[in-house]
Image (cartoon, rainbow, N blue to C red):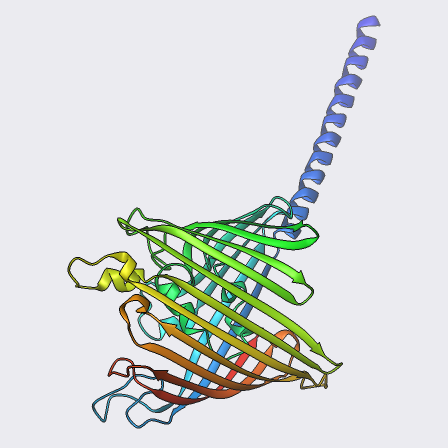
Length: 381
C-alpha cells in the first residue's frame, strides 16, 4: 500500500513538473514571438522616389544643351527632353537607435553606369543628441548644399562649385564615416560634423591611395531663421597635403503673412586636387593648384495655400568660380533666374522655368559662353 501511494505521488509529481515545464515553455515562446513581432515593427522600411525631367533649349547655334561648344554642325542637340534623375530611396529603421538608407539613380543606366548608380548607402547609430555615427557612402557635410537633396533645391541644379569640390573629394557622394550631433553653446543651438573619407569619389572598391580627407563643419543658429556654417578640412592626396575651407550663411525673413525671403550664400576655397592629378606640368606644386568661388541665392516665396497651388517662387542665383585661382585661369560666372510653382506640400510636385547663363572671362572651345532655357518638373513620392 505504501509503495502504491508513493508511486501515485511520484506520478503526480512528474505530471505536474511536465505540465509546469510545458506551460513555461509556451510562455517563453509567446514572449519570443511578441519580441520578434516588436522587433519587426521596429525594423520598418519606407520606400520613396524622386523624378526630375526637363526640356532644354540652347540659344547659341553651336552650343549643345549641356553648354558645350561644337565645331561641327552635326552630332549634338540644341533642344531636347531629358530625364535628369530617376531616384529610388529605401530607408530602414533597424532598432530604436539605428537606421540605414540606400538610394539609386536609375538614370545612370542610360549612359555609362561605371562608378555611378549607387548614391547614398549608409547606416547611422544614434547614441543621443550629442553623438551620432554614420558610415558608408554619403555627402560629407562640407557645405550648405550637402544638407538637403536635389529635389529641395530652390533653383535648377547644384552650383558649379559643388561639382568642382566634389571632384576633389570634399562634396558629392564619398565613402567614409562621420560623427555628428547638436548642443547649445551659450544658449545658441550648434550642430557639428566631423568626418574622414577616402576622397576618391563614389562607388570605388577601395581607396586609390593612402591619403584621406578630414572635413569638419560647425553650424550656428544665430537666431531663428539665421544660420552660419563654418567648414574646414585637411588631408592628403597621394603624397601631397591638401586643404579646403568655406563659409555659408542662410537667412529667412518673413515679409508679412504671405511673403517670405530666403537668402543663401557661400564662399569656398581649396586645392584643386583633380586638376593637379591630371596635369602634365613639370616641377608642379600643389599650392599652385587652387580653386575659389562664391554664390548668392535669394528666393522670394509667395504663399498661395490653394487646393492645388501652395506657393509661387522667384529666385536668381549668381555664382563666380575660378578653378585656376593661383594660375590666373578663366573665371566662370553663372546667372540663373528661375520662376517656380509648388503644387504639393514639401516640394512633392514642383514646376520650374528659367535660364542658365554662363559667361567666361576667357572663352575657349572647352569653356564657351552659353545661354540656355530650361523647363523642369520635380516630383517626390
